[in-house]
Length: 267
Ligand SMILES: Cc1cc2nc3c(=O)[nH]c(=O)nc-3n(C[C@H](O)[C@H](O)[C@H](O)COP(=O)(O)OP(=O)(O)OC[C@H]3O[C@@H](n4cnc5c(N)ncnc54)[C@H](O)[C@@H]3O)c2cc1C
Image (cartoon, rainbow, N blue to C red):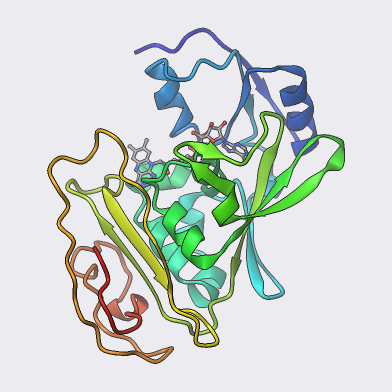
């Protein structure tokens, strides 16, 4: 399919992109284009102007910032998956990023694009919810606001973003040895999740945060049968073979998928 006609403008800075968005009502940000362009080709999205921010290089970074790790919105899934800082400080995020699509998708798609698209079938959304991550959003006049993941993902493809705002950073907490697990169920290799579950062991005795995205309409055939499985109690830092390890085709050793608390975990 061929998209409806549109104009194209490249932005050299976040400020310039916000200015252009503010002056054009149905303009849209273009980052990696791996979600937006397929929608445009299906004519499910018809922006009159694309504002390309892919060359705004100061939005591409991973860095420690106090108790958190800050990830620039334009950081690609490949860069997230291979970040040494994330692998040591918040390994569930690079693990989930390594599950996104195929190498081509991961080299072009960005974490910011995935979050701003707010597709509940994405690999990052359940992980960011379980972590209690925060999104940094910039708007006109230098306005900056920080939104917790639970408030940012308002619904299906509904991020908490005004048309003239840009997501600039995703902040994830350092896990400091807390247990975590991310399990993705999909029928075809390199596909989106039909069901995905992310869990992060709570600190100070609080229960593990667990969440899973709603099913995407039209993608699930039949019923995904809930399975319960008792898991041995684990202490932070202990490792045990995770049920997704057999399917994981990448370089993650089993010990990176840590099981969590005793009790049933629906898959
Ligand atoms: C073949 C294929 C397989 C895939 N498989 C998976 C998978 O298994 N798991 C998975 O999670 N994803 C998968 N994806 C999606 C992929 O992760 C996309 O890269 C991602 O969802 C969108 O990132 P992007 O940079 O391409 O964003 P774009 O397509 O450029 O943008 C997506 C949306 O977000 C908006 N946007 C982008 N950046 C910003 C920003 N900084 N601020 C405000 N708004 C912004 C755009 O306006 C647009 O509405 C797949 C994609 C393809 C094509």
